[in-house]
Image (cartoon, rainbow, N blue to C red; front, side):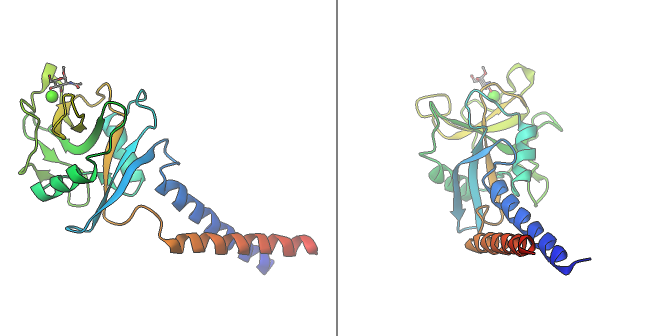
Length: 211
Ligand code: 2F8
Ligand code: CA
């Protein structure tokens, strides 16, 4: 086999991989986009971002949001301590879309009613110790509220940027909060890699066409 072809194929692979990393980091491969963030928490070296469907009228269910978060390389946020909760309150205090923000987090009591657990992320299942429920919540309204939203609606129901249990496909939720163990935005090195791959691929093609 012509060695140049092999080299071209390898470079093209690198190029496609770099494009994929960049598109994925922007959320563009999954129909969701990063709307706010990423915000870095120096206390645990994690990053947090709010993703959305890009249209407040296009809702996303908790299970789809969980998959989308994982596809982005993160997980639905697990706000395990008062400090971590405080961090996202401050980080996303001004993060409002239209009347407010309603974002899924990784908390559910679907396994056992009333026994909420964090179920996303590398630390696995964690019982709820710290909590920040809205007054009167969780109330399992209508008997079908097993998933939790982080609600930030100044002047609305979620004025306190606190938590509420809702159904898995709750009307009105088009956002989700994602936590990352590493920076979801590609390092400058990725852009160098992309540039290098571009030069290598097009350089290779030019050479072949000259023959
Ligand atoms: O009054 C609180 C109550 O408001 C709504 O139900 C009527 C919420 N449901 C949704 O947003 C789907 C409840 O979760 C909330 O407890
Ligand atoms: Ca509720």
